[in-house]
Length: 245
Image (tube, rainbow, N blue to C red):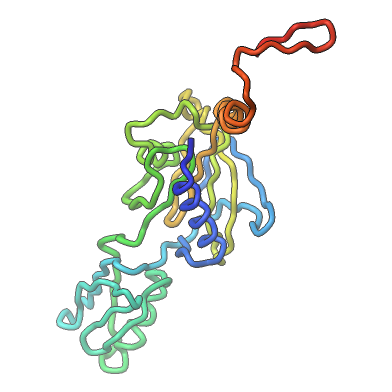
């Protein structure tokens, strides 16, 4: 059963995501998945979005013909870094191509036809969020390719997925223009080995709901057994038929 602190933390994550306070961060898959657009969500799109730089990312800037002006820098808490000759550069929320174009433009003020190469060496800000029916909900680093099933296992620790509704896992992602999208994914086919996993993207939010049986048991425990003074093995009569619970 999901504790109140865990539920509050998940609701906070969803609120931050919908409010645009979490950073923006899908490729085609053969897995069957529901694609929906409830209130405040735009229709789902599988279009892959470019990675945008975030706080803490380590970036290498090279100038092959002017090596003395290159550097390996870390994006600071203010979303900026500093380079020789040109000074402070705003990086947070920008793509590598965007940064490259700006750096070439700024270096060209002092250098003749500079060639700039930009590469992200450490994706510190690349992360995803997992909540719901897992034992360790929270924020996880997205290092390399991580699928939806892998993310759930990472967040579940040594717990059991018996109470998780794996056929309706919720995935929330931002579109290319920063709007939230939501879909439900059926992971039971992946568990059977008949479908591929769904690769996550930076800033994805994963919510694992309870299974129907778990929800029913929780309801009976919280609202019936604790609130109504009778035994679970009680007998009641409906018409002429005896019914046992």
